[in-house]
Amino acid sequence: MFLAGCDGPQSALVTAGYGAERIAELFWWMLGGALIIWLLVVGTAVYAIRGHNHRFTSRHAYFLIVGGGAVFPTVVLGGLLIYALQLFAHLRDPADAGDFRVEVSGEQWWWRVRYVGPGGEKIELANEVRLPVNTVAELRLYSSDVIHSFWIPSLGGKMDMIPGRETRLLLQPTRTGTFRGVCAEYCGGSHALMAFPVVVMQPGEFAAWLQHQGTQAAQPEEEITRRGQHLFLANGCGSCHRIRGTAADGELGPDLTHVGSRLSLGADTLPNNVNAFARWIAHTEQVKPQVRMPSFGMLPQADVRAMALYLESLQ
Ligand code: CUA
Image 1: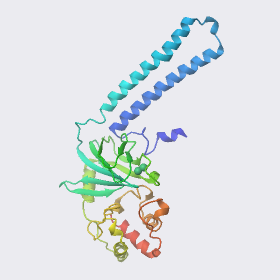
Image 2: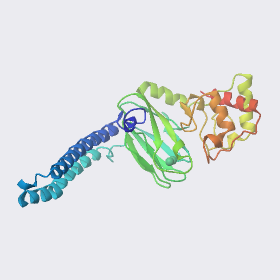
Image 3: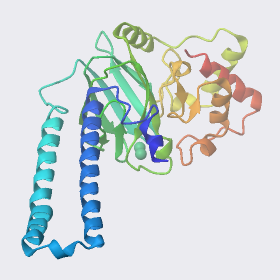
Image 4: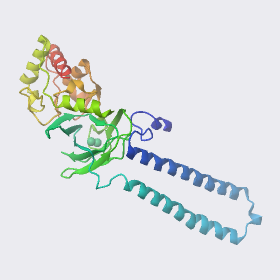
């Protein structure tokens, strides 16, 4: 059961970033040290139980109690402390501003993500973080409601997101791939449904992706997606969601300009396909308990489907 934590896209032991490599290194040293100490303690206990006490003098006892009880733990813990402190000094060097900046805000229960585009303009998206490989990304973390914690185990350590404050985290991915980030601080009913995919890409691919995210939404081309867009606006979805290039300019919920291009829906709760969009629109509160968005299950099924097709077309 415990071995299940050793693999997968959300394991701190399958490292893909500088910070995570240091943390895994520390973990293995501590595990090794703990194993040796455990063997020593169990060995001593077995020795005592088997009762070779006739050769045991008070000098031996003194040596064991002072040596094993005071000197040994002080030396081992002191050594580990020095090792860990010098290791973690590398993780948050205030002099290192990073090669580029990403702003992430924790919201109940999703992630607002903002990049700075080539011309200095802010590009907002949600529930997905993409980073170029071998580049230092400076993450500026915020919260709009309660304390959340931003954690991508494969890339680095976790950092709290505190209302009214800005925290920083430097991440340096060392290989490409798709990983998973989570909220690591209990933040209310759907805390467990607050995750996001993380994609580490080649710098060229990343630049193309970011450039595309900065463009306006695709205009619907088919009859059904046009109807979906009309229904989206007519049902008031645009008062909470923004779709750049349309009348929808709400800021309360996730930006949906390129929602069809994301790897998942609802902060990594559902896969990204038409059926999942329809399920999310009609059964929002069942999929994500206590979510702020109301379910639109009262709409005719055909309308929900048209809206789902429209959203899926926003590549
Ligand atoms: Cu956000 Cu837990």
